Length: 193
Image (cartoon, rainbow, N blue to C red; front, side, top):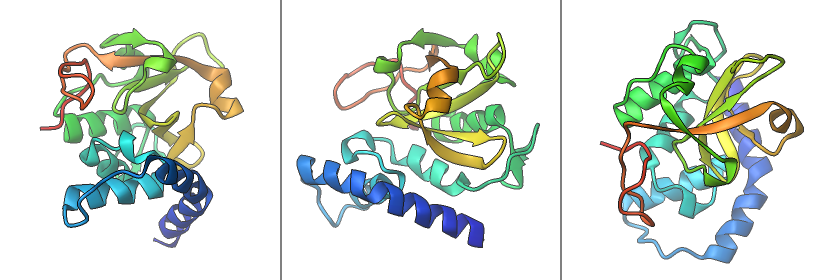
């Protein structure tokens, strides 16, 4: 519990300045009595993602609840989870969509997309010291993604960090998903049910 609190506090402290700068420039008009708007603001500050990017509160809430979960190869619970099972659980719980059983299999289920086309809920794939895809995460906006790291468990990382830049392979959007976003009436992104 202390570790999770420490991780959340450190994440908040490190990303607070970035989110405040974004919030100050955007000045969103939200109704403070609306619980969904409060949740968006909260996850925006905790995760360092612009308020405008937090259109899917259920996605951010799921990620927040899993932050700090230890890594365990083949694990599927909050006692321990690996990267593909984390993505599987997220898609199952948030988007009511079933993913494959490993990162390579999941990649066969997506339409590849460029990094500059990523939207919250898209998948990001990595080839870490391999010719094959070895890691998967879920994009959350502002070049950040949630994933289960083998060294630090479920966490949020930045695609612009040198390590992730080096091993980044491609983004992917589920083929069967059809959602509505504020900007596009129909796009190929997971839907919140």
